[in-house]
Image (cartoon, rainbow, N blue to C red; front, side):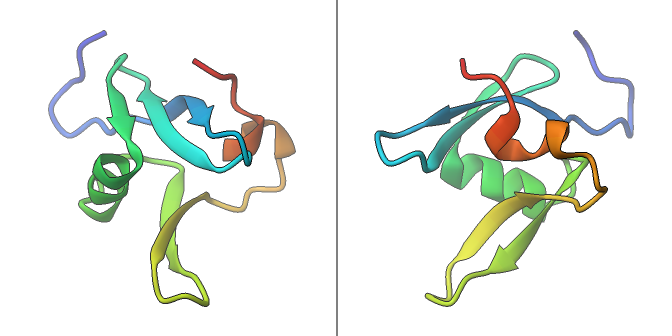
Length: 80
């Protein structure tokens, strides 16, 4: 899938570690990003439907935009 100029990707699948923490993301164009790379892409506005928030530990984390639809929460995306 190729993106048109100005079109943003979205996350379509996730990878989790043994504790259930998100560790990697697959984008709508098929790219696979580790967590740090995905966080940078979100920070630069390249990924739609998600945002960053600062945790109690001071780190930035990726979360889905609140839209009332639990089916598209990051934890509910399929694994890859």
